[in-house]
Image (cartoon, rainbow, N blue to C red; front, side):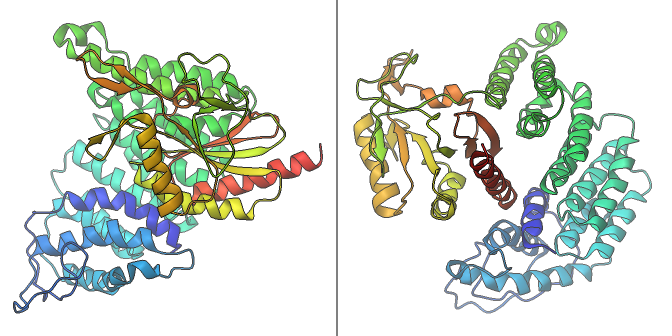
Length: 479
């Protein structure tokens, strides 16, 4: 199985496995083996080996999915810095083999067990476990829907023809179910859409997203925060280049805002739904602003601290309440730019920076790779002035992490809050680009037009970005 497929599947399985922790499974014990304990790291212990409980086995498998798989390199090797975790792969096989000996596993425990089997590439065994669960007498519609959701999602992960065929089979069964399973239908179709997106099957991906969106009206309002995710952004990227793409994006955005508006009866029952709806709509509006930039002129990047690059000379235009030292980077100067919007407190943002530096070193002349960030108002638990925090960020990114790409930092003044405290002024870049989650990657052509968006760090996203950069370079050379 492809390494990246395993990593994608791990993200699905991790959430499933964590729900297993603490359940009682009648399994034969295996012997605990140092040096890897539940934390996944080495420990010093003089106590004798003892049998592991089922909960401990499950916990170790959870650690395996969360900690080991994402550290695999492109060729399937474990990164040297994670050599301790290399112990976990054969150990996980051992733990799974031990769980297989269990003949008393309840029907309810088959879902996560089958997901683990699928994650280890044991497709046949995984299918048999899912089928055994679905054949259970007295299974409610909701329980059946959840099993079909897990099955279709984990088999969408590998993105192989065989696995996708299995995923489609379970997804068809899920679609045929009546009753309150709309949330599972939505999530399963989004997983399938993302699989097709990664494979470059645009029409299939769009169709799956539209089937997911069709399920939203049946999702209880309080659960609709689940739809304020990145599915809308990915859908917009896919349809932007299609006939009537802009009209489809606008219409879908309006549908989402309507879905996130509580009915009068809900508000009458509980006024908290009114504020909940406003919060949902605010997050969704950021997404709409973000995708509205596709095919449009990119706003200038406004910052007052510039690392690894000289500050631009232009003053910001059309931006309210900026510090006197703020400058604006225009993006229509003939240079192709990839911007990563991120934050110091975002682990994935920091993880992406070495990738960005490597990409910066490999792109041809005329292409730049930037990191756009902002201050948060404090450093750890210590409140800082904007200048002090910017100095901490320079030390972290440039001196400690040795990042070489140009970095633009918005360090706005602190504004008085309603409780007489103070909060950092919002970054104009976050507002202009509709950044609601990080990292977000925005690719801009030499004319300053936004040509591509990606939300989140993944190998598939990086692969698509590299292909889009190559396309824009070829386009500029033939202009």
